[in-house]
Image (cartoon, rainbow, N blue to C red; front, side, top):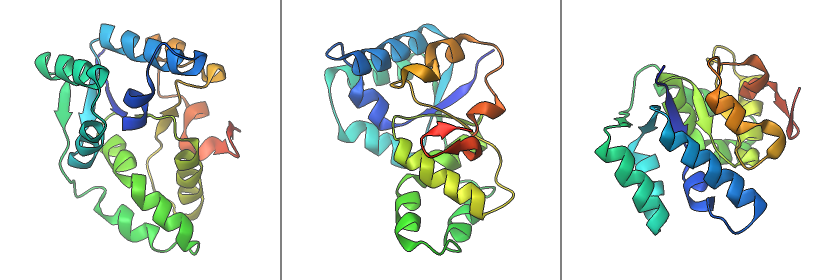
Length: 176
């Protein structure tokens, strides 16, 4: 079954054979490219991907584009009120951090609800958002740089929408 993933720009820019961590990310991306899965791309996310040009980024983006595996995501009414709800959070520093990456959550909500990102700080901020605001759909977040998240196994399994990977269940750097 084909699914749509929101892949943060930090994933594509971190993939390389240089260190064990960056190699895990590269292996994850290579395995992703072997699947028939697609990526969701908002205008903001595309700008982030293209702001960090590298031969690898160009290769991955070009391959996905040529195979018609990029789903263009426009602003959508079902997530418009997320930004309004964020303003209700009292911690204004956290609000600013959440708004920096909100396009990832918005895109995941209107697609298959999967975010691939290395940014655990953003994941913690989104967890706080989930704790403060009710009614947000559950979204899975996978960090392929963290060995204990078993990202490759998750990518290859049939049932990816696991409550243990929901953002709301991520507390202080670990899943509860």
